[in-house]
Length: 595
Image (cartoon, rainbow, N blue to C red; front, top):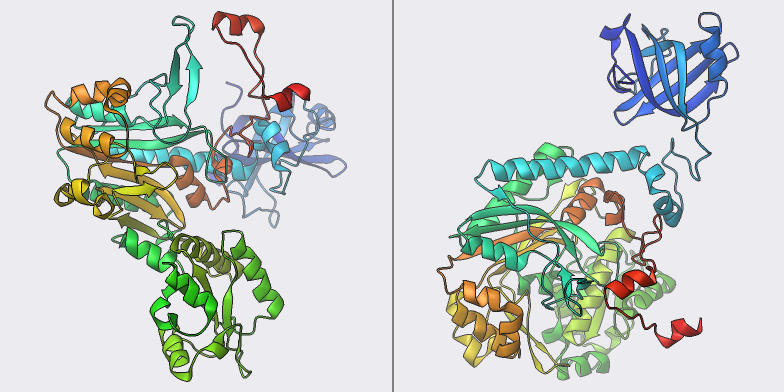
């Protein structure tokens, strides 16, 4: 071994030991006859001293050292002089008096500082990701992810789960995002698909009698990128037989309650047990089905109050089947017109035509775009509904429900960030349940499953599938944390007749369904137990626990916002011979051909 100890290991009780350390030069300080090096490895930092009087050759060699050079040193552990200790380092009471230095590998000057967590261009960081991962913040993120996954594995193993791998090369069964397709050389013209999730395979494991399965599963979806998405991602895939919705929710809640206590004890839960919201309640209060519970700013429906108020914008929205909803922004009644215009422009991004408001400045006159249209009685009713106090700012959107929810739901989060209402040390888990089983697709003129094709309806709602599918509820449940859905699950259909009914309801021709899912339908005829599961996203969970703004910060080698690996320059063209072997001809879009 190149080292007897790590750079984070030695303590005051090790004084007098002769040791070997190896790592990277983190910092170098030249004090004339004495050179100090902070030597870093994955485990920490140790100060090394090269003294020209006691070790002249080692001191002379140290003169050449620069940041990120890889070296090995040998020396004696000694106590730092009184007053020079570094309490911020676990090794801060000792140092190594080096008597030998070996340069293992010099290094070019890095494109960004590694010994400081200074901001650097993200594409540069991703291009040199192997350097970025040396930085302390990224090391902590990788360690956090390791601890999260290890905890999950240990927790589930202790409860009778088996970890089972499922294929990466599988059948294409379009059911959500676009598949990533893999051509087959042995079967010309045919393709595998990378799994969007192991959904069908984990259900087949329940048919197989496994009963309790989990997997730290790699999943692939060809969809537009954003901060909480990657083309390839990791989820905890979990499935159980002979269970009801409550069983899976209780197991998942216990898992994450214990995980938080073990992995991030400095953070605290917003509530335990986790609050439960129906889909309807979540939309009404927060405008979205993945709400952040850490702050107020809840939506208030005032449609009944202003239905005949005389303000045309409100009245027309309600007559058209929409609604009028508002948010009481506490303490912002002194907002200027410019500040309110900024909020208006923000909601316009999400379809809102404008933002009506009433401002109640402290000690000033009420300002509003519409309050003059309201009678004193209506004003009183509106103010009571919105729970107005001096200093408040009321903002309203009037439109179709989907636009009202989207714009105010986004505005709520925007305001919370702007007003510093978010406590980053609070983890507000909650469950959202009782989703609609089906949603109407106006463009396709058909029903779509709100979750996925294999989610079971509530048993008591099955008759509604023949009468009014819009009123049926699904046996699904979403786990939400701090403004993100971190996991979705459901009780699955385990009966072929019901599964085929759902296929028919969504307009999937039974012949097509049998071609795509025949293996599932046939399996359901061989004694399939009731079963269900959930799939929390490892990347999103780690992102939130680490307090990072996007999941790229907790993935070792992520793609950038354009879904490119800028380090390896992928995707990239392939050789003509490879395409020929796969019987593939590339036809570029005309715009690319011209360029």
